[in-house]
Length: 364
Image (cartoon, rainbow, N blue to C red; front, side, top):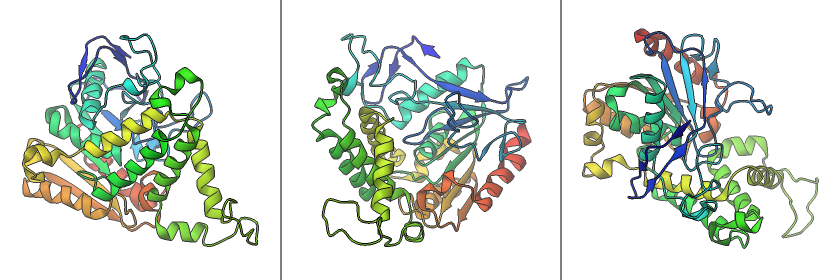
């Protein structure tokens, strides 16, 4: 969907016009009260469920669909790709109207709040005055939270999974190391690598390897790989792939570098860094969430998620409770680390199904 009205950004820059790629699932009911917006995380897209024409399965297909926790027989689900991404919405790979060339590194920095404003325009264009719920995991959870701060009257329920009210210094540090891997790749060319017909594949590979380590728990890595050698015995080499876990990380990194855009990676990780609603409220998370007093929340965290630890979700829960806001909280004892929000944990899915059936569907 194309938008001709300029989008002002938090940085002071403006997107003069832009397009958003989106998919919908289910049917919008007569009073448009059953819409659920799904916000994506770092490397995901608008394709959240079902089998795409190219054969790929939606990244949250285990949760969304007919008869699933978020039942598309009952809800009208919207998956949207954010500006700055590389999966169809306007981003660094698209034409900059000011130069006639690809935006590249000149694409303006975007924030979680900028994405919410773009999403709000899409929702309005679809004829939806109020969302039944907005949901997301990780970075998507931050967007769901931001909806209740910026447009509390336009959403009834917020479901934020494996997320945080802001990144810790350690998380920002991981993002910076990943970005440095990309920008120091000789094929990066200052972000204008499209014009050179190359991709900073080495930098992207390393960035993904770094990120992937943080998505898994120590226990899950130990159970899956341990200290198993790739070829059964050591090669006594500093260059060869010696351990199975090394082979796995390189495979994940190389696969990622084949489909993801380097400038998009820089933009999205920086948006993660900037998200901090308490900063505009004198450092008070309780005060930041005052606009959301009329909303209802579900927060879900996972015990072995050390990147977005349960303690961070509990910070949000406390702020909401202190405001007298209706909130439910589930802390799932799962071994998978941060990636648990994408996996088939029956306890997690039971919580989600129960909330959508008992709470979200009550006003649909």
